[in-house]
Structures are given as C-alpha cells and as structure tokens.
Image (cartoon, rainbow over all chains, first blue to last red):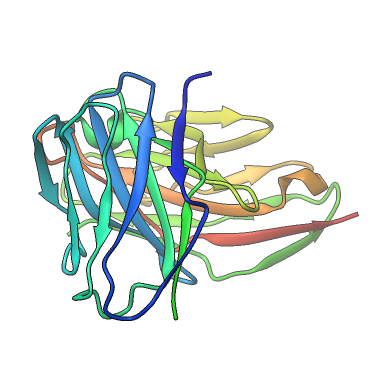
Length: 115
Length: 114
C-alpha cells in the first residue's frame, strides 16, 4: 500500500544531542513537508521541499535541518540549537509543489521528548 | 500574512447532536480552503475542501461552504457519531506557485459521548 512512514514513533533525547527523524513515502510525490504540532498551537511548517536536492525554510526553521537526496526520503534533524524540541512532528507529501492546492498526505508522526 | 482562526475548544456533544465548528480566514489573495481531521494517535487526513466562492465541500456527512463575503468556512454535520471524536483543523492555501503553503488554524478537539 502507498503511504508515508515515519520512524520511530517515540523518541527520547538528552539535552545537547542532535537527533534525526525519518520520513519515507512511496507515493511518488514530488513535494514533502515537515510540521511541528504543539498543544493549542496547531501545525507550524518547519521545512519543505518541492523537488529533489532543493528545500526551503518554513515558519520555524531555526534549530532544524533537512536533506532531500532522494525523492522518497526527507529526514529532519533536530539540532541542539533548537531550544524547545519536545513536540509531535508530522511529515507530509503532495503530488506537486503547489502547496495546499494538492492534498497533503500525512504520516503517523513522531513524538520527540527531550529529557 | 495569511491566517486562520478557529473557535475555541474543546467541544463535547452527545451522539446524534448537530455540529458546527467555526472557521474564518484572512488572506491577501483568493485561497483554497480545507478541513483536515486527526484521529487519536494518527496523522492528519483531508476531510473536505473548496476552491472557489460558494463551493460546498462534503465528505462523510460533513459539509462546509466557502463564503467569500464573510471570509468563513464553517464545518457542519447534522448528526455526529462517537467515531467522529477527533481534532479538526481548518486550513488555507493561496494560489498555486513555488511558495504556496498550507496555513493551519490551531485545531479544535471534538468529543462525542454515547
């Protein structure tokens, strides 16, 4: 079945450590996105990529980094520079880079907790 | 910039009650409007959408009409079920283009009791 997978489902990190969240899609979508979800704040866009080897900052990119070396993969690294990294992280993809004009398909999310 | 405002929650209803969740937006252009739903422990999924004024999106008994004059896209359902318990997000996207993105509201939690 086609879809988006995120791993791991739960992730614990010590302060000062970098951690990488995985996102893989087999939908043959060009565009991929990373969102952060905090209680009472909805979803905020971290980074997005409309094509392989290209990506743009979203609204809250500070303390995060991404790569897009393959069409199906868009890993997110939460660096030690991110001051409040504990959150629920959602990856999404869409057929093209036309933003929300294409339906975005979401993965099940990764809950990151900094100890 | 663009923004989406949803009514404050949470909302608790009895099964078969009528549901309205308010959503208003601010946009410089002529956006498309969406409702996404997040069931417990899952990612978001598209519930319905509308791309121009007076369009009505509908799915699974839910409906929302794009009202340009009031910049609103309220979600309604005539008779809710326990299985509708979830978080609902209103969202918009400006015209397609290289930098077109989804802007989400804060979401509202709906709980339906038997």
